[in-house]
Image 1 (cartoon, rainbow, N blue to C red):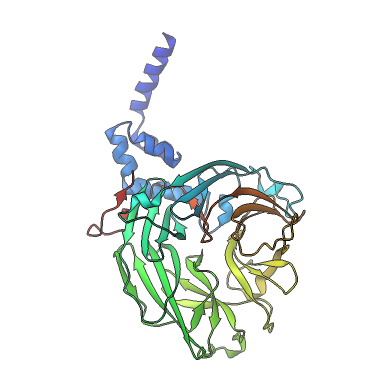
Image 2: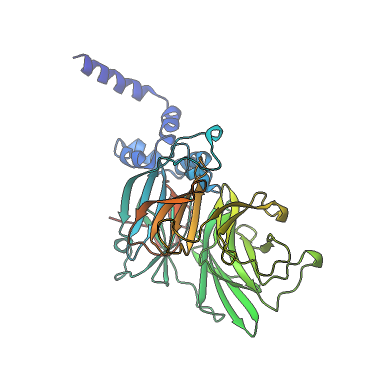
Length: 422
């Protein structure tokens, strides 16, 4: 009887709560709970589906886990960030329960192992969400605001929210005559409140390099071509690294590139880093470390601790992880740590890798593409331990933040409708 009275009192009290208080409480909840709570009442359905509420919830989530700092996904007991991996016809979501440490407890040398638990693995059958025959290859182009940009069979593109199952098909861009090597990037334009896909097409002839950029915006649901081509050849990574509202690629300079106005600062090395600002839609070169070292080569651009990072592989030595502590400042480049070229328990070379984030104790979460493994590397002990191993593709790995955001928030009403997958 007491239980019945208590339940009745709670029901009356919740009805008496002001709408603002209810909304504030709901904004603190994870996406899965909010999706279930749509069934509570029509008013809750309308509230949780409202674009203003969705953007407020996104703001709340990104405030706790900043998108520009992937380390926000790797500490303080985060529960709504997932590691997204692609296979032939599936997207795998790895939910990692990471150590709940504070900055004061940080151990930069990583002399102790963090207790990282693979809490769950969810598979999303992307092929069943689009009206196409069987898909043989899925590439993850990028992730922002809870949306994944995917390339299917190197031709078709979709924007997909795994949490809500909303899918927006992207119209095919016109084929460019410049070349056939495609490089992609996906990110958010904060000034115009828009998501953009960038497709770069590189070609070379007699030492002259040209890269044409095609840009798709969700607000217009259309592609357009930048009139000015870039005098570089994009290389190594097919996907641009998103940081500070710009996409970054490793490039090769051609003989046709002209020095900047300040010729003293012009880097004559054959390789470089180019950033493309998603708002201004302009490009610039990011300065490299090690002046004058023409043998300095790198790959594996990424973001560690909110800083641009790269992998340098001196001949016959350990990999060096470089980070740019102050964005755009050449002198701020420094070696963060080193990684052995071979696994400690075998003679196998590590090969291609992606550095995903640094845990609070200084360990590094990384993907070993050749070995099809997600591992944690302990710099202090110079050891690896496997978190996940399976049939996963060698394409981009993305850290994904669960949100309610649907592509239709940005897309015009005249665009093709979002599909709600079964």
